[in-house]
Length: 148
Image (cartoon, rainbow, N blue to C red):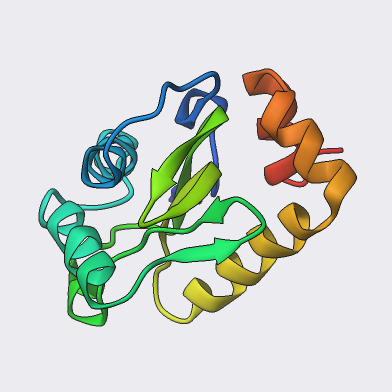
């Protein structure tokens, strides 16, 4: 009898960090990227690809949201689609903008754009955005994982 391996969840509560303190953008990207590595979503080189992407254009999306992700060439380093979340209630500088919600994204295959749009859609709702920025890890997890 064969057991089909359970598909990895897009987000686990342990990949949500709240009350983060402002840090340089590169450091934040390295941290959220390492969370994706530690979560088993990506191989280590993906973190550098996230930094590379940021150099070519900012992943700041407006509405205090940044969605760092790797360049196209790094797709080979994605093991499974996943996200990692860092919340900065006081904000952190993102190339002259203020980001309060930073979501590192690894999208396998064609899932990348769907993940980007799902996350952005939740943050664009002001009430939901406030709950994410001021919520505890469980609340943030439940909102972004679509569990509420």
